[in-house]
Amino acid sequence: MTVATDLDTALKIERKGVDTRLRSLMRETRGVPTRLHRAMSHSLFGGGKRLRPVLLLWTYDALRTRQAIPREAVLDVACSLEMIHTYSLIHDDLPAMDDDVLRRGHPTCHVAFDEATAILAGDGLLTLAFSVLARTPRHGATVMGIIADAAGPSGMVGGQQEDLDAEGTKPSPALVRRIHRNKTASLIAAPMRAAAVVAGAHMSRIEEVTKAGLQLGLAFQASDDLLDVIGDEQTLGKSVGKDADAGKATWVGLEGFDKARERTRRYGRTGERLLTSALQPGRAASRLLELSRRLWDRDR
Image (cartoon, rainbow, N blue to C red):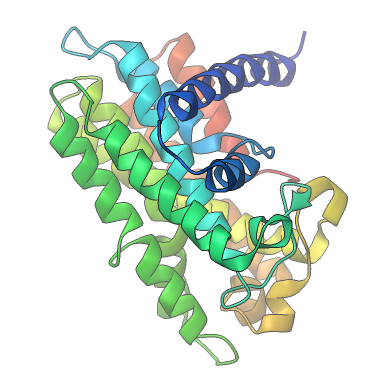
């Protein structure tokens, strides 16, 4: 059995656990209008790699100390991240944003339902996520702050605004990097930082893991831009070729494909090096490092 197969098996098991808990959390949420519940579930359970939840869980496993909170509580933190990520995709696909009709191989929420319901479904998932986060033992306020900062106006939401503002312009390298850092890398680094906190890691290690997450997040977004050029819709589960059509601020558009690919590798290798230095050698660390490679060395 190859390392890749081992990792694929571990990912499949972890994703199943995340999905099971997500379904429980949705069932436990009472009083939701039927159409809204269906719309939220349509996007939440319409596929997806569960990358951010798994990244959080495996970072926790690699850094766990005697001061760590129980893993079942960490699973709820992981699920809240998937809710936030899914909300962002619902809103990103709206006609006023990227106007996409396909996500994770399925019709986007506003296509399957309607635009108003899709907006409310995103709102519902975002606020439900913070209700779940509030129950985190001992570290609830800290974890909520980490994720709110990453997802909010100075993080993902702000990055999305700058991404829209930059369409059709000739952005500077600094602007492209800032957009990518805020709209994507922030919500790769946040799971890793939150995981280190709930694992009881020392502050110096928390900072090291956060720096690694930002580099890996930049690599993840850069690789996404590459796949928009060379990927195919069936494999990716979403429309391709839209970045160039919309005049998006990407490294491919600014530097060309070959330089953008080398930049992707540079970010990814830097992130892996930083992460390696933050971890103690062991099975959990090796598994996390292998996952970190897949953040940027990927075909989907």
